[in-house]
Length: 618
Image (cartoon, rainbow, N blue to C red):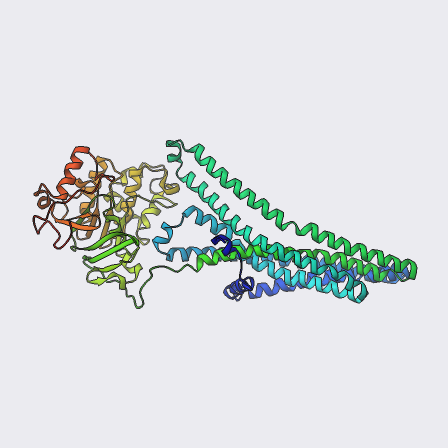
């Protein structure tokens, strides 16, 4: 049995366990609204039972006994019953819709808040498009599970019970014979519930994959067209769409089997009652009023009985949705604030790595006993080939992950004992791939510090060499950037993200390839601006292009996760055999940054303690 099938099989009582959890989390909030909806549903049930009961006096006293004096009274009662039923139906429908819509909004907020607490590792392992699609598809299961339960119990269950009471009151023997259709109907429902449970989960997962794939294709449309991938992606998405269609058709075939089975059983019961009642009326001469009332109750009982049966099948689908939502909500953050974590008190911003080791996978160490100090108020550059661990180092400093061994200190405070919020509030970060959010240019810069004034935002943009092109936009700073800044060029997006970091005014500045998307002229302007911004701040710069770090106060050279050299540009270049010098020669020959796919440069034996990390492997 595969994992999908195993997860699809609910444990005994799981439906009620999930339902109890939903009620415990939301019942108090909607108690008064549910009481009102329940009263409305009970009113609907009572008027339905009255409709069946009143058929006996209608037939016997008006048509059979010809009591004209009762016509007005009976008609007024029927009219009042239908009016009351219509108002109650409207009241319960609107109330349940409001509750359902509020529940959806409540869980949307709750899920997003929970996702924001999960670590970066969760999102690295989960496709964002598929996750969003799965949440949207499953979140209605919470709403449907509650509304179906309430309507089934308060309306259909009570209605069916009331009609059965009318049937028993009118003719106990016929009632007993009519109820014989119950066992085969219950058996059919249980069988279909098991089938629907498995297929519904498969359908949700396939649909989420389909929507996620469509979202990714539209977001990467430039790459799709540049590499002529339209046909291949259309084939893949078409295959997913076909699978989703097949699952949808299978759910329809399985769940709708209940309709012909229940119709045949109901038809058998009605025809049997009519035949036996006709025999009693014709042969035994019994008045027809009780029979008409009984048949009316039997026919009216068919709808709530069918809805109750279908509700069980529908609840299985909603249960699958609710379970998948709670599987997400029950995901525990892999690294949270430590017990007793304190607020960070960062002033100078000195960063110290003490024998730090880290790995993403058990057999793939990324950093190995790394130790260095980024001096307060100075610029420390991290260089090395791709895969050397540069970006991981930045991620660890921001506690996107926790170190495996060793420690990281900021101003002498172990960051594992600080709250993540206070730590990150003291850091301004510019990533290698600039990311802009929905909204205007001004909004995106203000994300750096929500309390920033318009003047501060414009100052930050000037420092990032972005003010000129921003003012050339149709609406200036209030120009919408489109999805992920699609209306701006790569260099423009990067300059906006740099302005966002500048406006944060944090004591620590992290620049992960911050100028990689800029041309030479823009890079020079931004570098000049950053020179002023970095004054008095502890700055850690990661760069492939060594020309961007020549003026750094301290340079750290990484190779395969180890520190192999450190010093100033002049000191490291003084040794022609140093790794740093070799990087410069490679760039000079190819006119590129550090070659990502190049093999690690073999490091010669240590020549100078000032340039080599003491006790480190080269």
